[in-house]
Structures are given as structure tokens and as C-alpha cells.
Length: 385
Image (cartoon, rainbow, N blue to C red; front, side, top):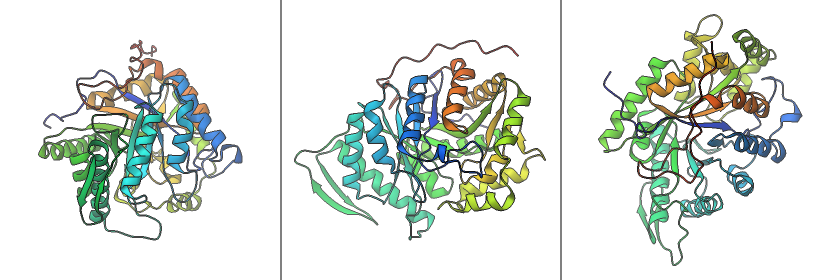
């Protein structure tokens, strides 16, 4: 396979992020909801501030209409409490009038002093149904309007969804002056790939086998080249790490001990994107896995029985997890969004067993700019086998 062109190939290390459970998805056991882990300000902000304190470089604040908290409101409230971490804030294109959304994002970017990153979501809005091409066209128009507002003194846009001419006497520009925050994006259909290739900075993938990930990366790299661009690649994945592989497998089994086929289906079906192409690829991977649920060494797919979306976890001891992450980095992946159940305790466990052995950084806006974050942590020697 020809080499994959990567925006940050020159960087040594990766952006290691955690996940803030805004959408009522935090529990000790999947399929059994404990009110101790409900999605409220106390629990979710504690997870985010723990990740900040422990040295994670970013944290995903997701968005859901079914359950949980409002993403932008939560991010604005927690932002002044953070010290170093970036906040990857999910926005649903079409939910808010683009000029107003641009102002809100710029305001949040100033609160964070440039530590804002944006996750572009193109899902259907509740009660609506658009074809894939239309959803991504709407997102394309939102992004183009946002960038006009962040970089110009006026917005002049005519498209399929928006027709906006707006002069700003005192425009609210983003704190990040070279085009606004980094845009992270996930999607698999041809319209999705084309949108990311043209406008976004980090292509997020859900877990699959290395071979299938490389195919996705090559496809995106080729499409970005058509726009004379490169993108970075990210992986959103769960992790179950313990001192020994046996303990990690036992923890994985315990996590799923309340889930049967029917309850798992009910959990998956409640998401708006339950029937998306990306979710279907996760289902396909489970069908190809071995009887114990592993699609390849240490990539365990059973967690997807009780989740829509990201449906696999890395399972193993610290040495095995570090080796797998290093392999992903060799492939060209420069951003990781990890999570575990419960999110607070697993955030601490991963930070203790794995994070010190990965060279971490914040992805730059461009090759000539390094974000105002602390210097990367030194590369430590991995634990012995």
C-alpha cells in the first residue's frame, strides 16, 4: 500500500484524550444503570477535571438528544475550572443558526484561551430525516459559515440550506487566530469522507482491525490530496487494562455480566444513529470475531453488544496495551480518545498503568503552530514483559 499522507507525521507522540460521560453512559456494569453514575454536573465534571489533573491532553464532550446534558453549556461551565486540557466539544450541525453557533464557539474558545477543539456531528435532528448527502452538505455549509465568521468581518453565503448576508460591526473572532479551533470529524459514507477531506483536521475512526483501519486511512488520505490537504487520524476506543491479561479479561466479562441479547439490542437502538453505516461496520466486526469476541489480539468486540457507536475495547495488561497503541501510532494515528467503565476510576487506572509510557502532545493547528499547552511528557521506558 502506498504511504498514507498524515498532517502531523513530523510529530513524535500522540494526543491522548479521555471521554466525559455527558450522555448517561457511565456505569460499572453495562445494562444495569446505577444512579451513582448518572449524567449530572457533579459526576461528569469530576471525570473531566480528573483527566485534566492526570495529564490527558484532550477530552471528548459528546452530544445526545435522548439523554444527558447540553454539551455547549457544560463545556462553558467547566472550562474556567480547567488548567491544561483541551476540550473536544461536539456540535450538531443544523441545531443552531450558524452565525449564533460561531459566536458561541468563539466565546468558549476565549474562555479556554485557545484550548477548544470541535467535534463535527452530522446526525439527523429529532423528528427529521435527511439523506446522507444532504446531512453532510448541511454540515459543509455550517463549517463554511463558521470559518467566514471567524476570519472575516462579514458573512456572505448562499447554499442549499443557508442564505446569509451579515455584516458584523464588532465580530467575535476565535481566540485561535489561524482559522479557529481544530475540527474533528467521523463518518464513513462518500459524502462524509469528502467533507472531512475538504474542511476538517482530524478524521476520527471507530475501532476495527488494523487492515480495515489502514483502508479507511488510505481512502481519506487520497481524498484529502484531491483538495491539496492532509488530515490527522484519530481512534475512538474503549480500554480495559489490568496488571495481568487474565485480570483484564475477567474485568471485561464482569462489565457485560448484566447484558443479554435483548437488553443489548434495546440499548443500541435508542441512539439516533443506530442504523448508520458506521454502526453497521461495528456490527460486522463482531460477526467476524472469534468465539471469545476478539477480532484480533487484544481488540475485544463484545462491548458493542450494549453500545451504539464505538463498539470495541483494547483488553490486556499494560505492556500489551502500550504495544498496541504504539502499533497504531506507527500506522499514522495521532489522536486517541479512550474511555472505560466507570469513567472516573478507569481514567485513573489508565493514567497510572499506561499514560506515563506514551509520549503525549496536543495536535497543532498547523505545522508551524504549537498550541499553548505544557510541553510533551518525556517518553518513558515501557514496563518489562
